[in-house]
Amino acid sequence: MQRWKRRGTCMRFGGLFACYLLLPALMTAAIGVFSAPDSGMTLFILMLFIAFPLATIALAAWDAVTEGFTVLWIVMPILFFMVPTVIFFNESALIYGAIYSVLAIVANGVGSLFHPKSHSTNSPRES
Image (cartoon, rainbow, N blue to C red; front, top):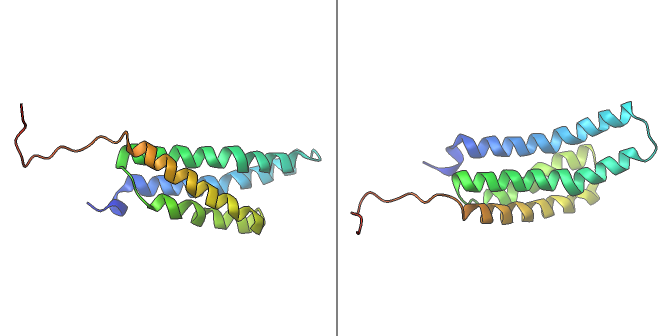
């Protein structure tokens, strides 16, 4: 079966895209409710440096452990991060999308080391 036809990988990419869109939207709503002077900038910086990298690493590693290594994790984080960059951030935040892609491919590579290997049934076992 081809990699992109599996539901697990698509669901994890969907979760990553939802995380990239929903976290800034929730932060924007929270800033509107709690109007502290510098809380908005602090929340967005924490999101860029902590929440997004942790979500990207967790989903990439989970995908690698369950499905194996894929190069889609090079392209998808930066592609998904372009939409929130246009909506919530400015163009200078695009470098973080590239950093998230590097983190994702490293996490996917490390997680693929723990992927269970399938055994071939074509040849008999050696005892």
